[in-house]
Amino acid sequence: SLYSDYLAEIETRKEQGLNPKPIDDGALVKEIIAQIKDTDNEHREDSLKFFIYNTLPGTTSAAGEKAAFLKEIVLGQAEVAEISQDLAFELLSHMKGGPSVEELLDLALGEDAAIAAKAAEVLKTQVFLYDADTARLADAQKAGNAVATDILESYAKAEFFTKLPDIEEEIKVV
Image (cartoon, rainbow, N blue to C red):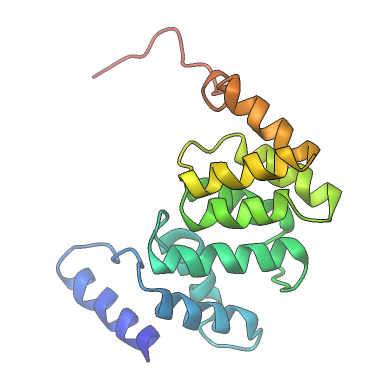
């Protein structure tokens, strides 16, 4: 399986003094997700770690699988004791664009008001939107979607930048 190949590669890299390679292959992430969903799977705990910490963000096929699974968790279509709805949103926020933005837009423009509000708050922190993403927001705003209007107003005010935590007055460099 791809998973056992990945474990073998981790061992080889460990002998060379290297950390595990980040996961960019969607097929491997699919296998990892299946092991997470199977609560009796012997590799479940490691699979959770690989899913949360080793899956590359951005536009990889792995990121696509991760974002889609996190959306399932947010919507309650998948249940993972270790990943609450809030943690799923947090993980989506760290993915920095690509498939994660698409899934966040689905949630923000969806029927569930509470989920839409949470997704909107995460979207307001994201800076890597494609034309297709901004077009979706613009279309939803034109159709009278208040959440889309709220997100666009936040972008117009550059809150993704102005709401960053303050930097310390003095930073000591050694």
